[in-house]
Amino acid sequence: MYARLIACVMFLAAAPAMACELDIVDLRSDTGKARFRVEIADDNAERAQGLMQVESMGRFNGMLFIYDEPIRATFWMKNTLIPLDMLFINSQGVVTSLHENATPLSETTIDGGEGVLAVLEINGGLAKSLGLGVGTEVRHPAFAELSPVWPCEN
Image (cartoon, rainbow, N blue to C red):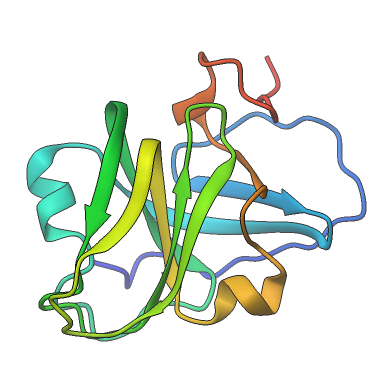
């Protein structure tokens, strides 16, 4: 599934608004900006499968889980073979919770809290090394019509 994804990350001092793409997630924090190429999980079957059985993932690839409306998001790592960071994002495109280095194969519930519209899963440990955390702003079409803090170019 991830063989077709190309690893890509960019740190930019400043950039003008850009058009959003469905397979790209841009993040910005106090430490800079990052870009991930993602697979989208936006229906029940895709969200249930997630990254189960994936043996490796490109360094700057990930999966973006998108919900129809804000929910209380809970995850587990059953059948997930690689450690993951999970960034829980509200409807304005702001990270409200972060779970770092989720343990592969664990059945322990990871609770991202209420009001989650999307969850970005990336390689474990990457959020910390990039300075991503609560308050990080996210740009993606999923937030385009919901008064995002970092809008796409029109």
